[in-house]
Image (cartoon, rainbow, N blue to C red; front, side, top):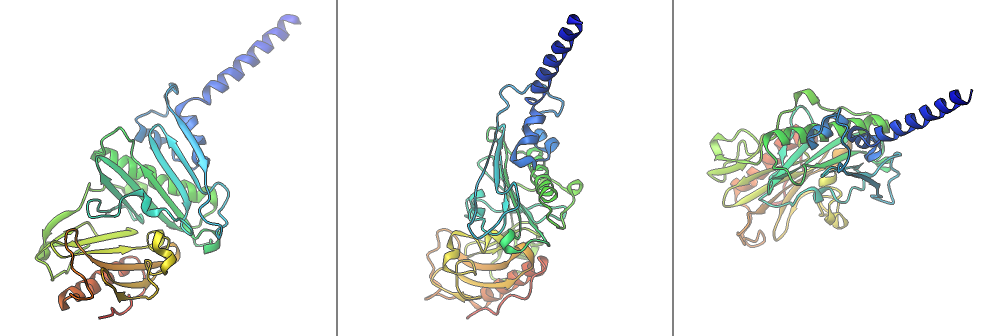
Length: 339
């Protein structure tokens, strides 16, 4: 009897030890991160680890939760951020997300490239690192409940963002959005993970007549810099040498740092012109909120719109850019541009 009891205790200790060891596997660590909202296989693939790996030593994982706004009552588990072996991922609600643009530097050197596969998302690559953002509207959430889900994910900090890494990052970001929707009860229409391809690393420069993406139909400049046209929460078209046209949606528009000055990208009227910007806007559905479309001068150009206003062709180009973008996102017609 003593031997039986001893054997049972030994097996129990060994079993508990094995279970504790299992909890240190990379897959188990990843499954617990970010409130359990990560797609384990995709994140491990991005980190260069197999799901069957037993080597958890040195595979560092940490998670923490944060508040985005006193005016929003987030579902359980949000907002959350985690680091998984050099990969940083954040999951938060779209309403009250004050740091949407913190995912990348908003300047001409970091053109957002749309994800594909039907996702409302983008990727930016700079200095051999990439950041992906995915936006989901939740049909059953009011703005007070968060409105939708915003996921941002960074590629591993010590790995060059090659085409293969960018595809893995896109899969990790969209998979996280899908898991977050499932865990929080968000009723949404997501894209297809099986249809994803690696986003380009940046924009392409072509003649205006050859443009087929975000600069299609522009006439005020002979050369443009564009990306593919898709459902991205940020879109850009650069009229080389003159204007930079940008469309912002959701947290990239109505929760920017400038929102304290007005809901239209920091302005208090649906359209207008000031010293450095000409803008218009459109009403959109769900987490897209207000679509904000602006024209500003390219870097190195000190033109002031108050003394050197948009030409007739530039005026038409901004209107055309706004109309095309609004139609892609299912928004209403943009407000008439102020002359």
